[in-house]
Every structure is written in structure tokens, then in C-alpha cells.
Length: 88
Image (cartoon, rainbow, N blue to C red; front, side):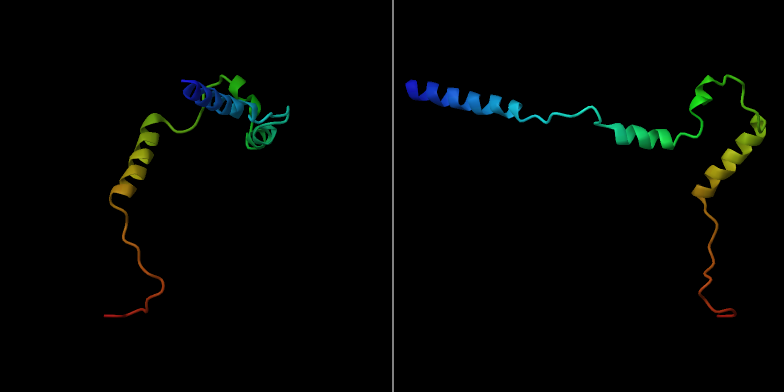
């Protein structure tokens, strides 16, 4: 009985001591990621612009999109630029 209690106490001590080894992050943790994200943003104030986007009309945009999708279904045959001309 005493042996099992001792074993349980030892196991609990080992398990709880793992929490003491948790890393302590400083205030700058994640700052490099935030800086990289900010540097990749073209216009940070774009979220405030509520003007509608101008460009193609809906039918033309749909046609372009459909052609784009079709290019993946049946891609055009590619010719090799490494071959010789006039081979049979």
C-alpha cells in the first residue's frame, strides 16, 4: 500500500514538473511574423475603401474564367523545342 502511494506521488511529481519547464516568451515573440505580414500588404487602408471595383463586366469575366478552367481539363499539346525539324 505504501509502495503504491509512493509510486503515485512520484509519478504526480514528475508529471507536474513538466509544467515548470514551459517556455517563457518575451514581448517580441511573433514580432517577426507580424512584420513580414505588414511588409507584404500592398495597401493597409484598402479595408476602408467601400467604392465598388470597376473592371470587366460580369459576362466577360465569366467567359475568361470558363476558358481558364477549360485549359486545365484539356491542356494544349506541347511541342518540344529540343527535337529536330522534319523528323519522321
